Length: 311
Image 1 (tube, rainbow, N blue to C red):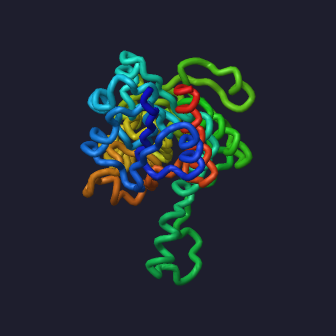
Image 2 (image 1 turned 30 degrees about the vertical axis):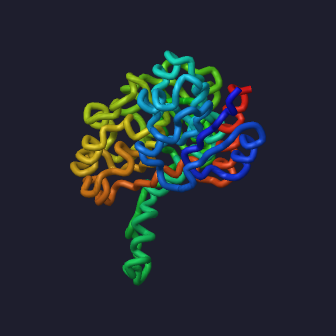
Image 3 (image 1 turned 90 degrees about the vertical axis):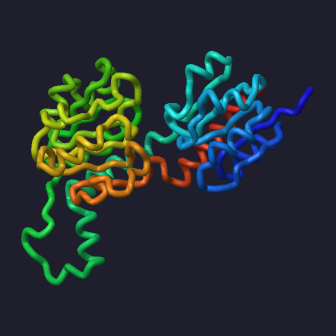
């Protein structure tokens, strides 16, 4: 019987690799940079398990190149929109992800973006680096506090709930949320409202929903125009949920006050995109799960997912 082979598309940490090497032959694209598509097409031939990351597009071509013995595609990410799940199911291939592990880190980064945008923190850092701070001024770089504000959360899963728990001690007045339906565990910390009310009532609106046919491109000019002119949009979900051209226009014409993005579409944004030079927009390089503890846990869990399927 041929030996099971597992291919790993990135440097993922020794703990995960060691787990897999106990039972399988492991091959690795030993780089922090994404594996080129052409290289991956060649590398996956004959493998039983594929360990991939959020930036690897696993489509029908990759699955066909791997062959019929491929039993599992495990992505080291909270979602699996990088994988053609329908095609995997058609071929009898299990698809695994790591949704629970990253929730706390993602909620942390959302709160960080709230503070960075509401308090002009990036502008303050730039002022120091550009030697613009010569004396204290009463109203220079004044932002807006969180006390008595209304926080909106679109998608009240683990990340949304984590944001609500973290933001409540700041003295916010209300936490509103919208999801497919009312959620029982939200009862004591947030109020369910319609999508229209969420956008029109929130001072800070956090996008935490998953990606599907309903949410792809959902946050467009129509919804942005329902927001307050003083409001802030935060997105830690997926870039495709927000129409970035519409967002750039909304920031430029003052439809909303600011935006904080951990994700974009495409990622990264192309050179020259108006959001990259928009002073009211803070963009991070997809850092939502960037803690060493979270990344180790995600990689180990991904390895365990492969072991569970192949065993």
